[in-house]
Length: 315
Ligand code: Q46
Ligand code: ZN
Ligand code: ZN
Image 1 (cartoon, rainbow, N blue to C red):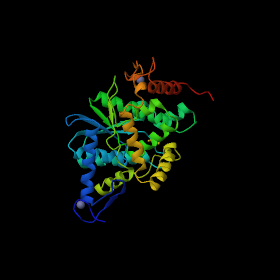
Image 2 (cartoon, rainbow, N blue to C red):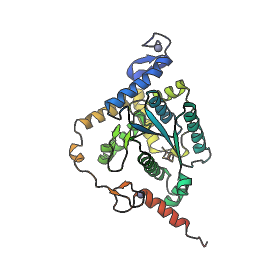
Image 3 (cartoon, helix red, strand yellow):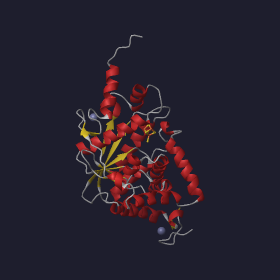
């Protein structure tokens, strides 16, 4: 198979685009396409300050690499979750992220959840969920809170995450199964800035996971191969497997599912619903927006945990 651009030996065959490219032209094509999506969805302009949330995985590191190559002012944020069950997941992902930033001379902010709040994610989950269920809800809440806090406090214009098409299609599939209007409404390549919430963008939302893997490998990015140990058996992985089966039988199905949703939304789907905006208040403790009239859910969680820690067990 030959590269469509130069006729040389193809390294990647992008079936859904009917496009084969050599290594050099694939590594050019990915940033070009990213730049196209940034423009198409009005994600950010050339002078804006971007904070990219990096986990040490292929998607977020590749996103950082691409935005840097496109000439944006882009710094990284790594959240140390303290997930070191069985494998040293957090330790290794932190090491690879630091290495990536040092090799390119990029600025990386590191927030260690345990050092900042006294408890790692597994510990917070243990105390709040009391052994019921995975720590993912606690983890998601903490990540959203911390990403917004750093973006806001450090004066970034926009927060970028490395969600790819497979991630977005799986979320869309889950929300469609239950017709969760609020979630469907909020699923978009760009969430505009609002009352204390940073603008959030997903520049990789139209790239298949396979394309992201190919980019990271061909670009020589060293990333963590292991998934978080708590991801095993998750609903999102199950949805991804179902969608992969569909994609196998009907190449391009995942892309059509996601793009048609975005088009339907921009053509007015949920338009009545959009008129009703939730009322947000400021959390009296951290100042971040919350739909509650008191503290936000993150502060309620950390308070609950520190209250428990100050109680002496008499067992
Ligand atoms: S939420 Fe759950 Fe992930 Fe947090 S605990 Fe691991 S799997 S890292 S995207
Ligand atoms: Zn070529
Ligand atoms: Zn708060």
